[in-house]
Image (cartoon, rainbow, N blue to C red; front, top):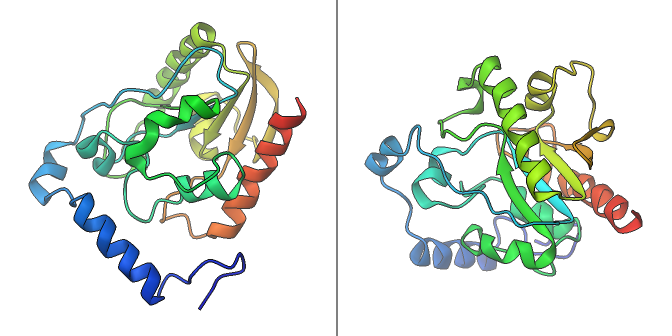
Length: 207
């Protein structure tokens, strides 16, 4: 069964074969490896003058165990990036270093890894916003897209912020807030996430 974009459905034989091949090429971290990854940090994917710096909330344990951003199976960041028109094909998290070639990068509000984003304290998010501001001042991306409205509201003390473009800037960069692509965020489907990323892509292209 195909989805609305003509791709095989999640339960199709082709999709199952793809998942099996991916699991063989990229083995799942063990329970012990995931437990050891708590509190770990991973490097940003960043370069001077990017078009968009995407900012996650903090690394999950899968990301900390592998060194890849948005690495947990079920996270919709990479499909949304492709559906939104930022990448010409669907990238695997292991290909994250290709992003600067597309004018893109990834950072996080908080550097330390945790099993769930709600384990972070408000003080950590506020401090993370200050650190992020310094990164943006140094690397000067044109746009900063925070992937998670609650973290943005707390970190930047903007409790009424909504999705989409923000009136404020971060240093000289224009700001946008995207939905959290975690599989736990049931309010957004792969299609609606892709559309949200596509709105940002259109704004970036027009700026």
